[in-house]
Image (cartoon, rainbow, N blue to C red; front, side, top):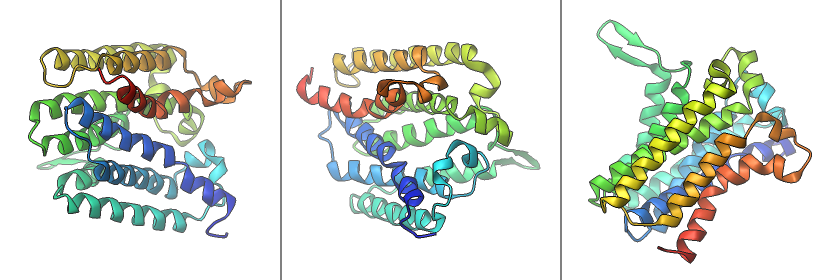
Length: 282
């Protein structure tokens, strides 16, 4: 199969929006911490996030054979090579800014996730547990944002933003799992949508949404982060709407908006929040 065949290009492009929106979350974290955004670090974060997801999709996963049939025949070697280049670029940029822990943190968490934890003779396997993957995603990217902000000396702001973005990414990744229930069931993977069902899942995610935005509101009220009411209002509107309205049926809906609802609301949120933060800074 050609390294630039149509399936390969789809594979390489599949994480582009995720990487871009992930970098913009770091930009928003800078704004919320009242720090001038470092655009090079934003770009580096986008490369690291893009590489992580492209790497995962370039590996052979049973569930992906069902959930992502558009990648069938894609050159996995090309995906691995592009992931490696993107990771290298991201690390070089971070290191040039004397930021050593943020680009390495995702890989440390990934290793712990894959290999589990050992306490003497007792081992705890993390991979495969219901909801563990979503917790790991939240810790990974919320923690990475927190580390970048903490390096500037704003430790309390870093803690609040780590919690906020960590919970957001837990919620978002769980919503994404809803569309992959068929493949996960076939592969024997017990994701939260598989275990809880849609109704109980919505109760859980609404509870986390309240906690997430409660943290944001308290941090704003205490002066730990900037007072950006438009950010708070749009964030809670988008998260609440997605939890309430999204179902796997949207993916095969008849209208263009239905088919793009998840992408627009979740991956497009960061871009719209950046635009709103620039146009309406207070």
